[in-house]
Length: 216
Image (cartoon, rainbow, N blue to C red; front, top):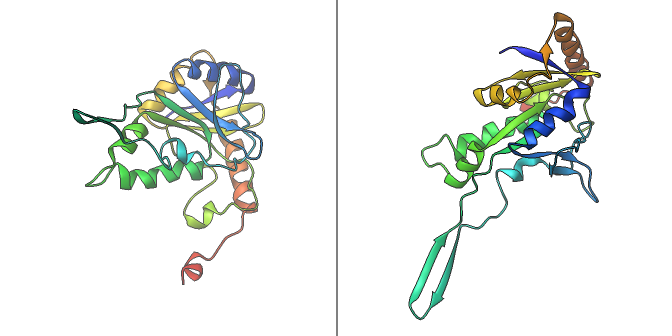
């Protein structure tokens, strides 16, 4: 896949293009707790925060309507819940959260007994992953085979300050980048070097846990 550069000043225009075709959910501050909320054209997400509430519930809900029924003198009429076929996009999801969907997909999509409601919603949900350019005190992805710059999801991004390095990771991601037509330029070797430097700095700042010992 080819990496591109999105100037920071073009971010809002790209999000507006995405909002025109998807329900876009992104990290936002809120009263009591920050979470992934649906945003509208002209709104910018809080890309510098780690949300208190993860985005998992947008696909794997804690509870949802499965069916409804009406009972009258003629008997019982059962109706299945209407399908949600809206195209959704989770923007600015961190690599660890993005990777978690790969794990739940193994159980609910790629198994002998897939969970159809989850599988259908997951198929309609795209992920734009934002690499971490700093670690919080609770981060431990490198101890479980992850990385703050894991290339997972449909589009991968890294904030380089005045610009974002972006890369499509799937056919869905390629379509998402097409909506940024005219907003992107080709990445250079210097951009790749800057991204690697940021990743190395984040990795070196994170503690390493002895997972085998913890398991024992």
